[in-house]
Image (tube, rainbow, N blue to C red):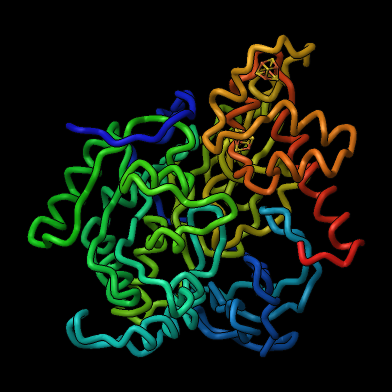
Length: 445
Ligand code: SF4
Ligand code: SF4
């Protein structure tokens, strides 16, 4: 099978065996959910409910604000406990709507499905529906999908890519979804292509996910505009810029976005959410996540209700083992360590990884041996060690000159460094320093 790739990157360990081979399990309705009012870069949604109100799963409970805003829909039926201060698993501070579950309520409030052939659907109507359903990038980036469907008027999108790379070690939720819902993925892609007026659709899947490739190919076999392409097993293949390079040979310019090269990229589960919103009227209130790591008793892929606290998801997976030491939201390369498991999971959260003391042990940092491996493997062709040094010294001009904003925070440099230097961590801190300096200078950032 021919495989496509990009330059640089690393062969990161897969570590997916703990959850591979099993089917997706449906999580029980949680006792309580907390739905963040803000997910992604848009303004927080405006609550439409108050304490003690009765709500139904799927009901609109907070209205989207501004062009980039997303609405919030109740993921379970129950009674509103109130608007509470929260920190999400993705680390965003803000407020959320807490709902206590009601027993024996499986009913869902749906939207009216958009009927007719996909080719007859109006792009504007699709875009509006995607926003109404509260869909954002479900691969972790959390960018509002309806914004991707409205590129600037002078931009022509000719290709829609569905990202099935799932390159973070441990994660298998997208692979399972590809194996269980290939037809929905292809329908979602067709709808996205229609919304953007794109002639070509590509589903990029890592070559080792053989069953997923076979099933999605089968689902698309009568559609000549859609191609399913095998990708080399390399990290960070799932980063948008790398994926576009591998699949189309186009390079997104520095500081640019995929639309600058005529491409839109969406995650596997986002494509399904689009299909369900448009064809079935189902809002985004559930998603599949991987719960894994040696510190959890029964690792697996779970269809959870958005807003379920991490603690409850872990309990559904059998609970923590005695040697559990660290909980990470997301994968080991780009995930965030959690200080508490009392945080809700949002629409963009992909995984809960529970590490043991041995796995979480950080090797001692040593002096840089100037091997340049970090430079050679950076997929964006940056100079990680210089950026990290400038960050430690707070040298803003140096960080800007070396294009710190272009870093995609993939962690490849830290992973490959033989001296175990916390390069990406320092670069992320450096980005914050640069942005603060721009703000205090009145710059646009
Ligand atoms: S500098 Fe940024 S983009 Fe380059 S390898 Fe490190 S984290 Fe990835
Ligand atoms: S990979 Fe590590 S040791 Fe090698 S140059 Fe970069 S920071 Fe130094």
